[in-house]
Image 1: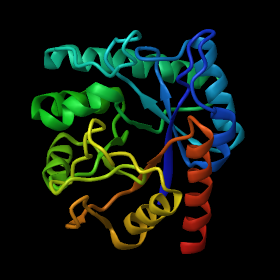
Image 2: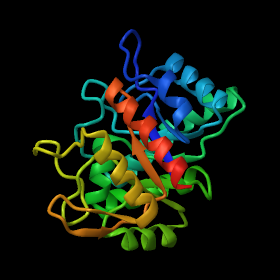
Image 3: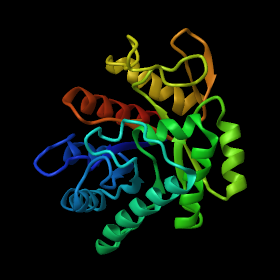
Image 4: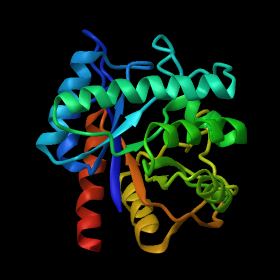
Length: 245
């Protein structure tokens, strides 16, 4: 079970996260491409850091929404979705090449990620962009109870899928993340976070907020390192998964 984390999300003088501390603890870095966060210097620093720790580099594209950190839905046609994806993937790949690296997967960010999981046309547009950019390039999406349908669509379009789960988020009975607006949506207890991480890694699923078992096979766990408590949780997950192996 690989750990992935959203990184490279600083912008100019504004600092986001603790990239230098979390990078050694993860396997996959989702690097912002400039539309919701990051600038050329931030991207370059993040890539160098990932290379130092032998961490896979994933593109983390979003809607063009720097003021809203990519968390606001913006209407786009499928063609526009493909274009904004290709633009960002090309930018990050160019930066990677300058460091002798390459993008190894794609994970959409924020509202774009949420919207594609609710709308089949948007998801198809994202998949088509990934396929167009490079044949065989994997797309990472959240695992839900509809993962078989997503796998079928991806297979039909010729795009490998990576299914992602969250150790620090509560799930509802439909296998969706509980809204952050609801109490208990984000786990803060390190023991609970580690327990959920091990549940995904060992049992291929998780118990919902109401106690229902959900079969949710995941390839990667998303973790966060933007504060000291989150960083300690990542360390605990890393240790627990190491023992589990």
